[in-house]
Amino acid sequence: MPERPYHHGNLRRALLDAAERTVRERGVGELSLRELARDVGVSHGAPRRHFPDRQALLDALAQSGFERLRTELRAAVDGAGDAFEPRLHATAAAYIRFATADPALLELMFTVKHREGAGDLQEAADRTFAVMMEVVVQGQAEGHLEPGDPERVGLVLFATIQGIAALLTGGMVAPEQLDELLSDSIAHFLRGSRAAA
Amino acid sequence: MPERPYHHGNLRRALLDAAERTVRERGVGELSLRELARDVGVSHGAPRRHFPDRQALLDALAQSGFERLRTELRAAVDGAGDAFEPRLHATAAAYIRFATADPALLELMFTVKHREGAGDLQEAADRTFAVMMEVVVQGQAEGHLEPGDPERVGLVLFATIQGIAALLTGGMVAPEQLDELLSDSIAHFLRGSRAAA
DNA sequence: ACCTGAACACCGTTCAAGT
DNA sequence: ACCTGAACACCGTTCAAGT
Image (cartoon, rainbow over all chains, first blue to last red; front, side, top):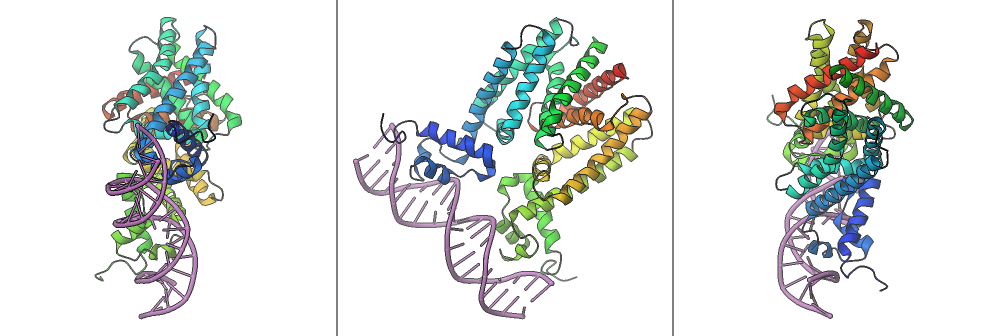
């Protein structure tokens, strides 16, 4: 147990943790490699070993964001019992919780994902969205959602969830209104689906 | 017609125009007051007369963004005939067109809107969303949408539209899929509404 | 293998001075 | 009223040098 936990292999982790906190509290624009290095107790040149430039750090943040979101969605799906509707509700709520707790990170994840040569990020994103697709496929199998290409049905659903998150982080909906809006939206979505099924 | 169109009262306009182009082409993060001043042919201190700091310029960009979005929505509503469904479709399409043509500006608009002391921005935003609410109220009056608080119905609708825009700018949906997704979503929304009406 | 520290070209912001 | 230009404290990035 050395006095200085850095300088010895976990600089990368320490930088990522500090960066994640800055992004959450002050936004991506305020993120400075030099400040991070200072916070963590190394010289301003040190991060370069782990992140060649600022963009590399942002990519790594997005990557770990997708991984965290995936485990949170997974826990929501698995913890909500087997019935479709509560499971759908829990999944949507978990996504929105992540989105509102860390809006700048989610935005970074989307921004950075569709950049050239971001193959790893695309894969991490796909694994994340696969969790939501499971729920859609279950809903189709049980007749709650219209049949056909699950991607197509999933997109309409995901657009709604992402939209709710955007309204919250954009301040158009107060947190107290979330439960009502989410329940309204899901009920609305299911009515539209059953009318078509 | 002087040789130098700036230095004489339209510096503000020139800076805003240049800033809008930079935001569109390279994102908010790349926006530099000094570069703007250079592009426009003034010293780096000159913008200060018109925008005390960088944030003031961003606020002004957001403000003019809301105004432009409002006129585009207005044109869509007025140009789509009197029938509800095509009018709804045209309005949603206009919003999504704006969002995808200038995603960084839209994001800036939302980010900046819910800051302390941004009363003018809030008002500009409200005027913009009022155009969409008109369509919702018409839909309710004609029985296409469920009755009750128009705000509540409008939010579900707006979440869907905003979500579609997010999927597009996030690269989860290709531009070629937009028409299908938008039509699917609106059809879905209307089915859900009529089932409840 | 990992980190330091000087160097360079950029920022935003402030402010006295010019016209 | 509006703009200039020096000054200051910050950046990101590069790279020789240290351990």
